[in-house]
Length: 258
Length: 277
Image 1: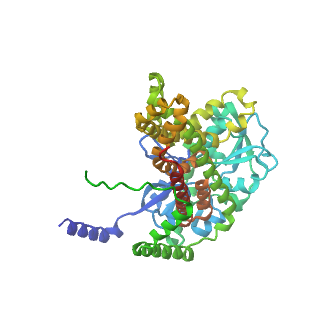
Image 2: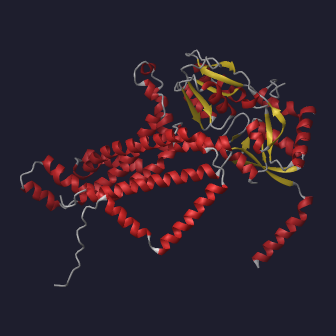
Image 3: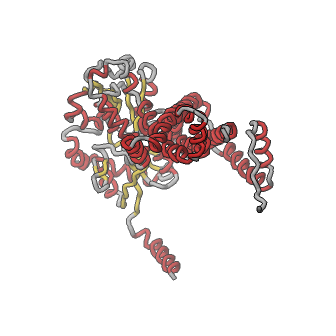
C-alpha cells in the first residue's frame, strides 16, 4: 500500500518535473572559508560566495542547495553526481580543467604572503629561505609553494583550514602563510594579526599553477548549464548586482580583477 | 574422580612451526575459495584502476610510512613504560596516588583522542609560544614542530588504556604466588621482577596486541595537526590526482598488511614469554 503510494508520488513528481524549478546541489568546501563562505552558529552557510550563488541560481531559474563536501573529494563528488556545481572559490587551473569544466571567472585575487613581523620573509623563492611555511591542503597555494618555495623553505606545513594556519602563525610556530590575499584580509586587519604579523605582498603570478581566477566548476557534459551559467555571470557583472553583493564584504575593493 | 581433560601445556613454537600451522589452516576448501575471490578482486583492481600515480609518490609514501611506524613504535614503548606504574599504583599505591592514576586513566579513556590531540597541539602548543624566552632555547625547534605533540597525545592515550589493562593484570596474579615468593626470602623488588611482573605481563599480552593494532589505526588522526604520516600523503595524492578509490584502497591494503605483520609478531612473542615463571 505504502509502496504503491510512494510509486505514484514518484511518478507524479516525474511528470511535474519540467514545470518545477530544477534543483541543483551546489558544492562548497566543508571547511569554512570566510568571507566567501562560513557557517553560522545554526549551521546555515553565508558569505560573499553564497550571495553570489543565489544571484546565479535566480538567473538560471533553479533551486540551489548548499552542499558542503570535503575539499579533497569535491571534484570526484561533482563527477559522480553527488553535487551538480562547485561554487567554492575554486581556481581555474589546467590540471582541474582536465577533470571538469569551468565557467568564466567570477573573481580573481592574488596569492600573497603574511609573515611574522619579526622575520624578514619575502614572497620570493629566496625570500623564504629557512622559513617554516604554511599552506592549505589542496589549494592552488599549496601547489605554488610545492613548486616555488619548497626547495628553499625549512619546512612546509599543510593545514586543513586557513584558520588553523593563521592560528599557528599568530602563535609563532610557522613563519609565514601563503594564501589568498582576500581570504587572509580579515586576519591581517584583526587585533591578533596586527600584533604579530605583516602582509609582505603578492607572489609572482604563474597562471599554470595559480589559475586564471575563480570559476564555477561543472561536469564536462553539462554544456547547456555551462552556457546559462556564463550568461548569468555576465549579467551579474553588467547590471550592478556584482557591486551590490560585494559592497557589504569588501567595500569599494573590486575583487573581479582585471 | 571424573576424568578431567587437562589441556597440554603449549610449548613455545618456533616461527617455522607457526608458519606451517598457518599454511595448514589456509588449505581448508572454504578458505581457498575466499582467497581466490580476494585474488580475483585484486587482479581486477590492478588491471582496471589507475595506478599511474604510484611510482611518482613512492618516496613520499615511504617517508609517510616511516612517520606512521615511528609514531606507533615510540608511543607504544613510552606508553607502556608509563602504563606499568599506572597499573601498579592502582593496585597497591597509597590512596592519593591510586586516585591520581585512576583519574588519569578515566579522563583520557573517557574523551576522544582527536579532542586530546587538538587540545595539546593548538592549546598547549600556543601556550608555549607565548614565552619569548622559550624561543631562544634548544627546545624551540622541537616545540614548533607538530610531531612532538602528536607523539605526546598518542603516548598518554596508549598509557591510559594499557594502564587499565595492567591494573587488571597485576591484580589478577594470585596472591599465593607472591606470598610464596616472599617466603623464599625474595625482596619486594625481586618478587616484582621475577614473579609479579612476568605473570602480569603474560596475562596482559593478548590485550596488548589488540591495543597496539588500535593504536596503529589512531595514527591517521595526526594528519589533522600537520604531521605528514602515510594518511596525509594519501590525502595529498587524492588532491593532486582527483582519484578517490585507488589511493584509499591502497591505504586499506597497507594498513591491513601492517596489522597482519603486527599480529604475527605479537603472537610469536606471546609464545616466547614463559608462563610458569
